[in-house]
Image (tube, rainbow, N blue to C red; front, side, top):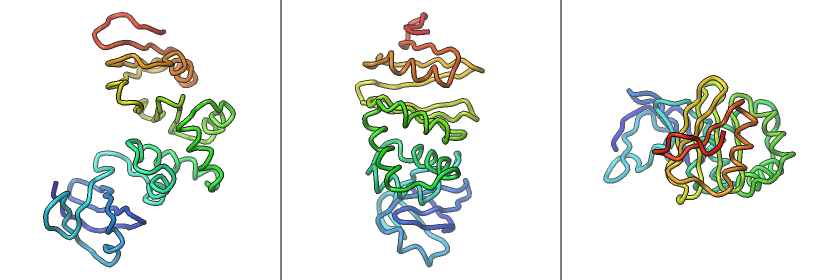
Length: 205
């Protein structure tokens, strides 16, 4: 990877850079050194102004750098950092996100099993949705009608198709507690079908 661009914003370990392909967010331990720079060259290895990796963009809505830094601080390095940061941006438009809220959110993401807090998230989340049963974490974009699922590597690939009020989830391997996943998805869609790839009929739905 090698990109050239203009520094738009820096916050913590994150930098927003405008490139010819569009704006991207990169992460680097040396992000603070770019505060006074206008243009930079970035590589993931070798000599450049900065060695960094792209965490978001250019063909997607970018989360705020502040929310990305908050996720880094409270959740560490997680595969769903960008999605969780977008979710925090949406929540932050409605309430003040404090340490107590983040503590509850972290517990919910990792353990699930908090219907009251889940209901609060559903009310506050706006165009994004977040569901967790402690093993699978689902981020929904209600505007686009798309979703992404994260979980244990043993779950395999998870893809989905959304059409109007129906969602079809395809798994390489059906996960444990799939019935809980089914019930949670029913909160957002009228009809939920869960299938194993290569099978014609649904397991649920």
